[in-house]
Image (tube, rainbow, N blue to C red; front, side):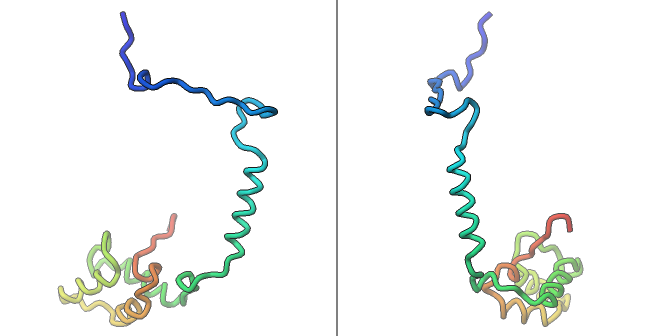
Length: 120
């Protein structure tokens, strides 16, 4: 009985050739790790851009409370401002300071979109 043909049978098999002095099973050189470490140092040393500025914790807490309040409807797939406007149209009286903060920080994605912390 013949085995069924697999899609991988139509591609030629290739084996990587090991370089001189490279032990079998070793994929990366120490040189690659050093370059990666240098890259990480460069990223850490960069000053924060204006979009990454730290926001007022009270503002973030107010937005978090707005996100967790189900009386203004679901928040999946829309921005916070769209949710606020939808709640206003439905006569649910969303808090005005939330709208003011959303308009003031409209260029900051941490404010515009709901951010859910892993595990919290």
